[in-house]
Length: 564
Image (tube, rainbow, N blue to C red; front, side):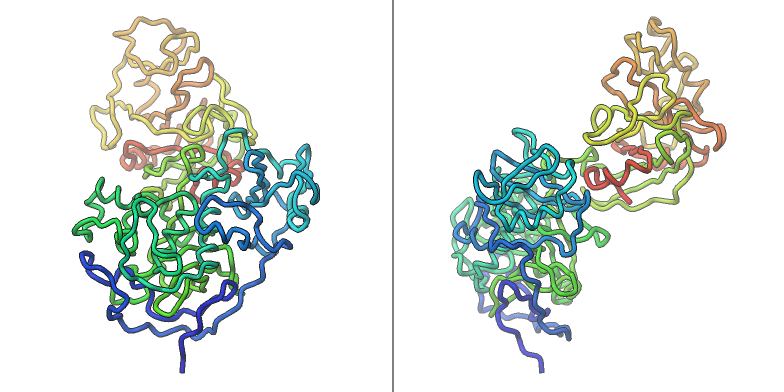
């Protein structure tokens, strides 16, 4: 006969038990009460409780002062780095001298933070960089950070990627993970009773809390006041919250159903193809009859013996806030990640719904393939539309252009820069603009202009009209070179490269029809006529083109959120 396990300790995960958090059990206009009747518990899994690994660091605690919740528990926080991590370029140490910390990134994700010492300890060096660390921290980092490019200074005045809302130097996802750890160390007993709260930054007594209070506290550790954020969003966009009869800043942020629309509107939605990361917020359905999420938690850095990340949560009556083995055992309905700050946001805005991905074989090849992608939610995952199809590029291959990604090569990237007449197609991220064609009308949703015989795209760098499409019948010519649009292009879709019209940086870049698959173009991207027609009919305003040689894709995939 199965019985409920004892309250979870910090380093012990629990089996999937009970009936979940009840913070959203009552109708929204009523005050919740811990005496409310609850639905029957689902059948538990057969696996017994399992112990987590001990913290990997040789130091007993993190040793970093965190500007967040439960500051008295900072000295007890421990963080695990992934087991079996090998020395490689997947590990990067970013030195923040202003905050006297070093942040370890693994595969581009902020994983752990270490204090810098002025004296004592051990010196860690890589290339020209030298920092002084506690001996245990040095023991942990020295095998990982060996190459000179693996230890870098954070630029003065910059925030660490992907953002730092509270300005303490700790990246937001890591700050949320630390907040989740401190909520488990605090060990609040489950209690969903209605409490009158101050506003803003209100919180129930620290010895109490429901599943939603774990989220409130973890996010507040990163400087996010979920109480105020939700209250303001309800006032600003009430259509998102049909379940709210009248706003109540004591309780709205303590209900699972009310939190879900806020996360959908303001955080990045993830799908099952994107692995969970510490700091992610997950919504769970523990009772199928409810037809929607009834529980919520924060993914932590601790792992079960099977390698699954544990989830900080407060399960139900009789429990305390703790890490539990929920991933893989409870149905996850939604998962969200704190979005990057504008400083660290990639070149593809979260609002972009359509993307054309062009993959060149290499920098100097004119062969490649293209694939259409679409997503259904703001910042959501990309899904492929149709099959990949062949394209041809400039006869000399590709070169970094000027677009949404910036002017030329991104920091740390290699490759030539686009110049007028170099025979290379621009690489980077670009807005897809208007369409032009010989027909009077087109099925495309893009702005469409029928080409007149006098329409020209000016490619003379000395012209005041460089990189513009103009009507030669109405504008006095000051150019020695221009492309006759109607003669050259049966249908052309503008790639907004070099919108600032920097002289000699490249001009008149289009998506257009090819002559054949073995004939390169001068700097555009060309494809078969039927593929161009399908593309034009599919595209909507706001779509982007990502055009890269294959070798440049993986290094930029995470930073640019490029689909696989």
